[in-house]
Length: 135
Image (cartoon, rainbow, N blue to C red; front, side, top):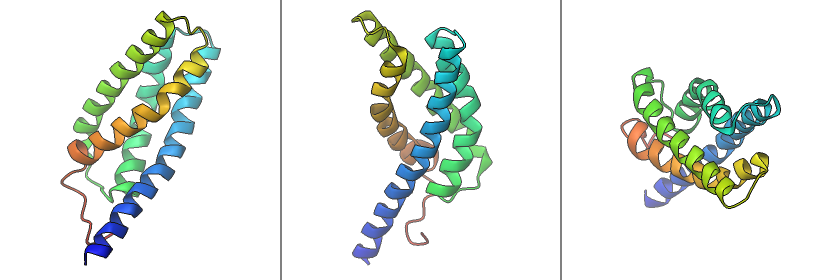
């Protein structure tokens, strides 16, 4: 029984990583596109975040936490607002210490923001949805 729960936790983590790769490609691709188009990094993060929220909500909800509960979108949006603020703060911080390449700065922030995202989604957004016995 405990072994099954551990394997399920591993499966959730593996699914999160795989879905996270897909979501990162979409989100970072949008961010890079907006930087390329000449937008300020804060707007590039804002627009890529807005466009990615619905996609990410469905992909993380269904593929990682087996949730179809669209009512959790408000919690998910709250998490993304926090992630946006952390991302812009991180970009500002890296910029203020002399990093001018926003592509690299954005890439540096991917891993810490992904970890924060998983923790918040697991414990705040989809915490009522996860059923480790079924997955």
